[in-house]
Length: 257
Image (cartoon, rainbow, N blue to C red; front, side, top):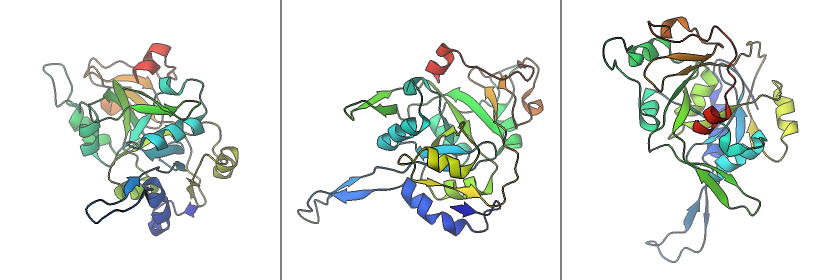
């Protein structure tokens, strides 16, 4: 599917939104007081963001999450860090420990900085709250294997199409960057049978850069990767600057995320 970059034809996204929320009734309806069970399989697809294209699914749908990991094709899915595409700071507050408003002398007001820079090309790494569902994959028998996450990356993208999709959903999307190609047609062809949709932008000339990753788990910003977002607003006294070097997570870092 192709849409305008400014979101002016966002009505075309109705099918994508319904696929992400996909549910079907199954089982006999014995009486009005005992309706059929509702099975929500959820959809998995690719959407544009203000950085790279992203594989997405409903964050609270275990079956969809397992399918997303399969589409990502990683050797150890449960060790692969994923992020949330959030609708606003309310989602950040629900699924993480939140942004500090200043823990004392020398600690920055992260909430104020976030308000000034978001939405934007940032991934903020924060401690996860109990509301964040377990990450799940399917074993060879189709049985879900699940793992709690102690931290999670959150994104508020500055892209009209991404925002139009998120605005119609009841909660954030789980996401991971599409790293194997930047061509939407190849995304679909290379993951045939694994993706329900690919949303492309018409006449897309936006440069594709990864997000700037900032670790906020200690309350003091630490630059992990310099990307599309400006580091300067977060670079308060005491913040750690990685001097623009690409971030490569260790096994321990990835396990924590």
